[in-house]
Length: 169
Image (cartoon, rainbow, N blue to C red):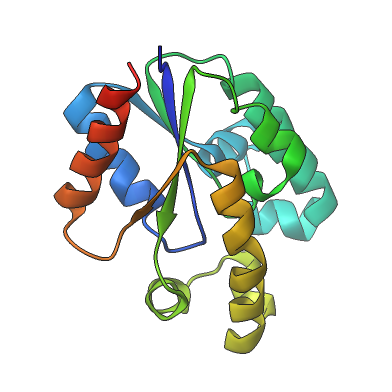
């Protein structure tokens, strides 16, 4: 029985937006891993990167992933790199988690993130971000049970995810 939906994908792929719509439709709690970490640390992600470094943040991500792996009736919207790390992806491989990769091409993702203060966006050029996107794409697919295109109507994406959920319960 599926107890949680885990959304993964590149920055700007729509994890937060789709997660919110799914949460409303299913009546499940939405947990954004970045917001979860920010609340635990009482700092924003850019502040954590600046004060403690990326390696420390990645440990915080893993700790958050472990804490959330047993949560029921929730949608977990993951940070862009969380599910590309094998030890994190492994936490959600059981039959209780439905891991969905929100698939959106790089130009569309970039358009959504280019003016953000996300640490990776600030420190990388568009070409470097596209390389990161290309490196992560196969890792998202490996971590996920399904890849769902998120380049159309929000509710079409949500309904596709609910259809996958219903076929696994």
